[in-house]
Image (cartoon, rainbow, N blue to C red):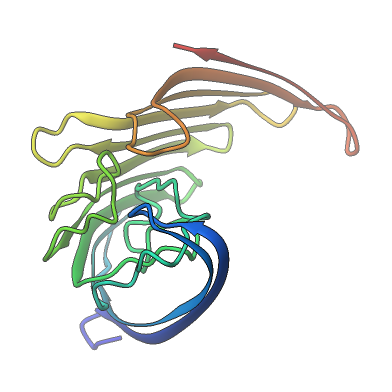
Length: 245
């Protein structure tokens, strides 16, 4: 941490994987009866953020730019390593700054890349809070490891964002989105509303996301609701419904 309040973090890592596979058909269509392969994957990351705080009456505001620069080698996903746990990828605000956006370990994210975002939050002394976040990723060389529709297939990624409004313990409203980086058309929209005390809590969600190439799941647009009640310390009840739009 610098004297001006900047927070700088440097990470160096080396990862090793070994695979033994049988009856594998790789992405080029070549079959193998049995093979043993592996990889050594080094990675360096530089993370920087600069939280700025301001007090106005009973409201505390924080503005925080966040960036990270990662360097790792290209070609970390050879055809003779099977991909079984990283088929589906969900790029959003929660994994923008992750070292790897893949859900598993069969695929690795290689090449130099730069992630950046801006956070703003305001909180009151009585417990209410509001927050906003926007961010994007840029990679020097596009990577065909990311399929069309993933939001990471181009040099500039899609723009991810989140807004949250929680004026008290009984109301919480969250909006999350992913926008196409050229025309800002939505590729994902999600609205979540929770209201009420534990004795009678209502949750309503709206979800939309585009189809992703080679994904196990197609695009989706739906609404869902849930009503729950904490009857006693040991007993709860709930009712939920989901509707395909």
